[in-house]
Length: 421
Image 1: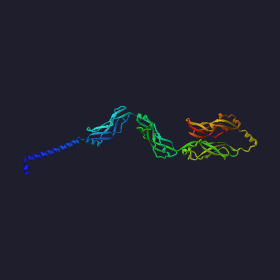
Image 2: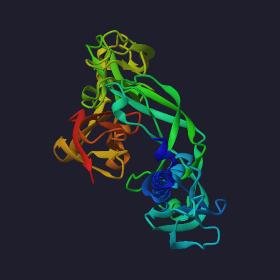
Image 3: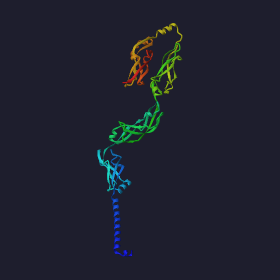
Image 4: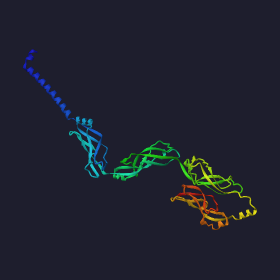
């Protein structure tokens, strides 16, 4: 061993082997380092927000997507750093672009020069329009299915009644409805107040992208049970006392409101009030309690005042006086008198079911002097259809004529069919 160590060739061979090993090791490290430095990767950055620069005081921009997809390619270390740091930016600068339609490209910031950056989509079509503001009336938007059965919205009020809507001129021009939307649980059976958000829609009920000021309004909604006004018809009942004559019954209450289920109320055309005339002895006024019809929950009034025009029983007269009294009362008849229909709205028409063709006969009763000048042009025979609804209705036949004449017709009521013109 000592001889080998002392041999110069042996030492030269050992030195050469060590040099070769060192060379191979260093070369391997360099190659590995170069591979690391030069390796590339690709990454997809999704949902990258897009910033838009424009004159937002005077213009509105549409067509710009909220986010885009960015593809980056380059050194792995740069790709990884960009993905983690997220300090990049994608934007469109429209500050020098005029009103109208334009195709523009996206711009980027803070991406390394060593990266290849591609945005999807590459270009986008945008519209730059004049920014305008306009005042609109607000309507109530309430789904009737929210109401309890047999309840309706009687009226509503809101504050403020108008709002300012701001947006692109073309969108403002397309506005069809501005509504305050009621959001509430089902079964509403009483009036309420609440804040309602504003929705702006076009004529096809599509929601529009605009700015509304204020965004909500205070709404007061009056909810009532379903009701309908019908005429009051007085009907004498009973037999007057001997010698007492009932000249007429009247009341200042022409109409009364009935509350209850629609299926019941719709079938009622009038409120018949029975007046017992068997106890009347002379002209008087008295209160009469109203009877609620079957199925109706309540009336707008509990009682009404009745005015009775009564001729008292005559005092004992001689036969000659009685004969003279009887002889001074006569009758005058008018045949084929046409019943007029008053108060019917212009968009409705009516046909008589009974009496046929709306024809009745009229009898006037009074003194010969009073009857002498009575002609048909002094008399108005009619039914009041002001509050009548579409369908079949029954209305009392009424007569306007001289007060000193007692009038009667061949029929007390007329049945009509009312429909749209």
